[in-house]
Image (cartoon, rainbow, N blue to C red; front, side):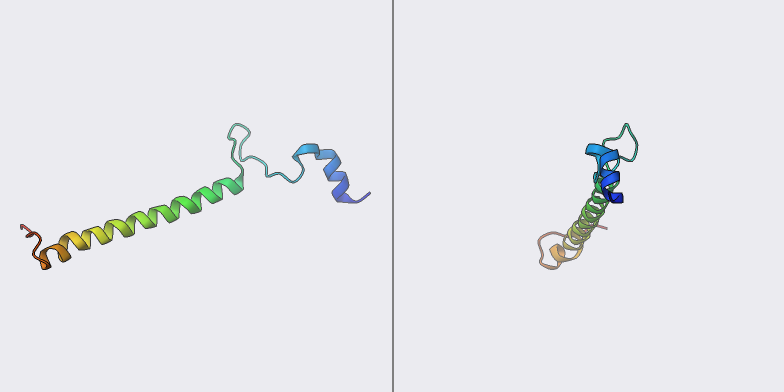
Length: 71
């Protein structure tokens, strides 16, 4: 009997599953890493959208004569 079979027999249904970070948090390390990557990408997309909106409001709109910047 190989080591993998012994490990599978000893762990039962938990064999091959990612363990939870903490027993009372139902998320595995892989899920937390995926959440971090998704949240990081979403934050950069939000920063990019805000920067584009600022350029449009500050420079493009007044250049086209749609409104005037006060100040």
